[in-house]
Length: 113
Image (cartoon, rainbow, N blue to C red; front, top):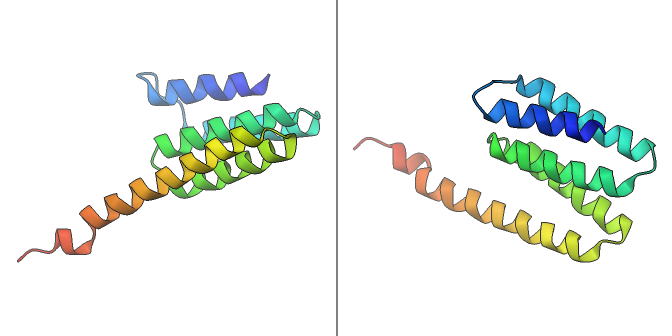
């Protein structure tokens, strides 16, 4: 499964042995496409979720939320309603964290008086 290649590269990119983040993204995207084309909706959904986690972990919240939304849709389409709801809650939590972080470090926080 190509998801395993993506997961391995993601772990290496976050560990001591650096892996190219662009390569990690290509591997996740390939795994998503391969799963969807192969008719494995469940694998595509899980891969979208894992990719979103990776992106959020490397501070790419915008792309992470995009793939989290895709995961939510794929899990819903697959019939995994509770899992989709869990990811909606996770998404809301990420947005709240981001909003509170922006308030603490917004433009007024960096102004020198």
